[in-house]
Length: 256
Image: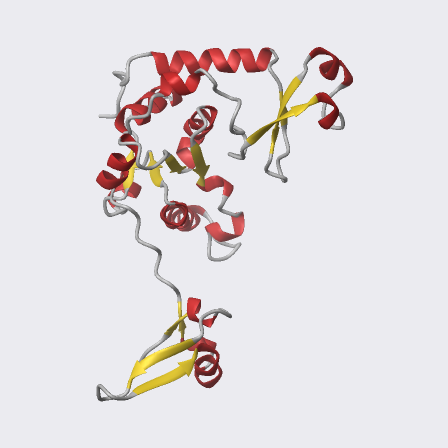
């Protein structure tokens, strides 16, 4: 009894080589021929890609070998936004999990639905992190314990404390990054920002704003396409993010 991985049915899979009982013989079959003969019912789901061990990921970021790149679970949404403000690639599971994928059927309710939702989130967290070459961040002890040493457990409670903790653990210079905060990455969707002049964003910005500011920052992620400028909201956000990283690396209010 054997099965074929779903990934092998792709157009680029080519031929598969099987041993034929002796060193001088080989059996060559195309993936399409195998599926046609045995049927799709014999296909196996691919195993999730293994994540990078946490110690290796921390060393790579702290040494500057790799840029900081994270995936946050649904409990760390505010942390993800603050990481993005520092131009750190921070994805969120909540942005990738659809309601339909959180349960096996739409009639699931109560505890059963919650279990399916947690299981789906855990799998998504690990898969997104592995695919993106990122480190998974979670505030859940159960998710951390089931991740086999590839996920960092965030202990701090508030988003500001969590930001300082992640910067300290991964050796990220938050103070330097905060000097140009909010100008490089969209906090709403994680897309990169590009500088635009007023006439380039006229359709998305009120006339009064166009007349007041010369430089704008547009999100390159098409589904988002938000436009930002250095108004009062920016000034408040810059002040808050700079204050957050300027404080002591670790705050005293940690989970027991």
